[in-house]
Length: 396
Image (cartoon, rainbow, N blue to C red; front, side, top):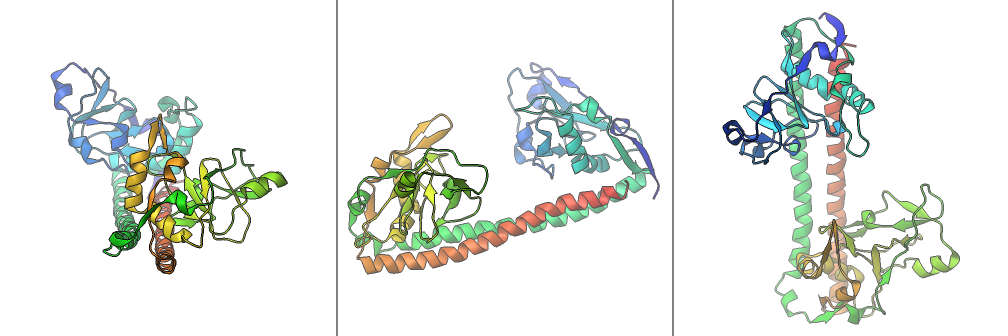
């Protein structure tokens, strides 16, 4: 296979064919936004088949000959090959291959880390970086001399990446099934016939005093001091010790905010899906907690912390929390005082302890399944990039 050195701009060119927003064509053509294209794979979502009303916004026309290149935030690596005629946001640049150059080969080339890194080096704007297309076209590349060889490389990559996509879909389904299993385990306890007979008491009746807010000081950027737990450390009613941050505290603050075995940590403010998540602290290691968490300390002679926490995280508990959320711009929150009024089902303590231990054991197993699937997904996603590197490094 022979190769030649050239510049990216010698292989393709911009084809910015503006569609008049007031024209009949604009009303008839399907509209593609940047969100309609998947990062990395370039897959176009079903919404692309819908007619889009984008008001007076300017759009570009494209068809089956074009490559659509996402210039906004080029690290998202959005490069698509449409198989229909439509119009797109001006954040997507329609590119046309020159004669004798494979469209499919070029799309894969544009997705390589070499091109993404070049686009980021030559970007304009800081908060919303955009690729400078003219500068990007100056990038030196090495490509097969013959169209047939370009097509062969593209075809082999297409087959390999299709296999990767199938593996990714299967792993994502396993991960989804594990998450559904966790929900089913909790529902089995709290939506059972027995649960309907349990007395309900306000959460505050089984707590010592009021809920306590966490530390508002910022963590340091290293591992000095004591671990400070945040929302990222709450998962499925359990504390996870990944992505730890640390903080240096006075002896007085350490005594005030130090977590004790059996403390319940509750997320009081965040996005809607995260507010209300709770976990039990059950470790002997030292840690304090961040300000957007609150601590509930239970009277453990009447209430089991794991049982109560699993109820807070259950679908029934979520319905109470969602009905009491206060919404603000960009986030929601719930007053811990309102949480103390939350009605908690409370069978006798041995029943709580047995059910809490059973759920804990089951959810540990689910967490291991999820972690395994997440690790596998990371490996699969890395494989896509590795295949691209392997295919194009041959040409270097």
